[in-house]
Length: 300
Image 1 (cartoon, rainbow, N blue to C red):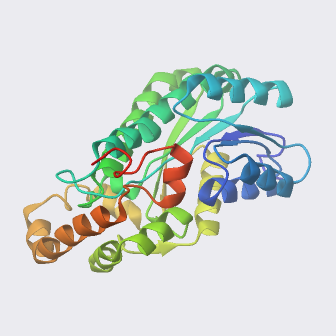
Image 2 (spheres, rainbow, N blue to C red):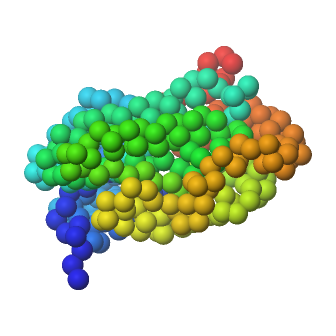
Image 3 (cartoon, helix red, strand yellow):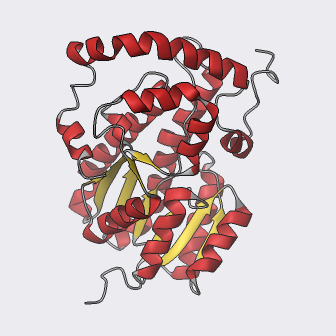
């Protein structure tokens, strides 16, 4: 049975690596035509070449509406339409609220929430024409917040809420909107955090199932591609993450706080020391991509 994605045009942000790149490969395998955007032109070019003929890429920053508009216009010029969008671009800083870098916090909000807003807003006229689909990549963190990841948690909770609001705004136009909630996926972002922060590794080990599970990027990409094909309202990776959605008040409960308190008393100060020693709030790769100065460069 042929895939319903055959010939469909899908625009993916943050597609140079990880989940975005692998989802592009999976959708191309199902016959879709891809338009990939991101901040790494060499990587985007390589990923696009690996998809075969009929795909395009554009260097674009989701926090810059002008560059994103150029990518949307270029996609329509090359492919004639946009059937679906995956708002996948995202970053994750290190640090606590008390001692974290405020510039890293605001940058994360800019990329992970404002970037979704710009992506959806600029692509929406074309998606409406096709009565298409938008998938906003949120996270398990949206309803299972973790200490030391306040910026990421806040941004992903905001992205989930934005997807829900957008769904109510455009459903009568025939457009479906979904939010994706992956747990830990074996990507550069997660591997960089593990390499940089021993406290991050320790905290992950102490999380209850399914919050500590790690999923391959291939399985995550398959779930995302299925969501686009089925126009899913929500997608959980792995599937048991759904339990945390329905139990979303549990991580903030007094019971959970009592259970985690002994570990957090040790891990949070350790994380603060490790981030201070790094002299940066993002992984080295994200620091370079976002053009974010280090703490030393700002004189902190």
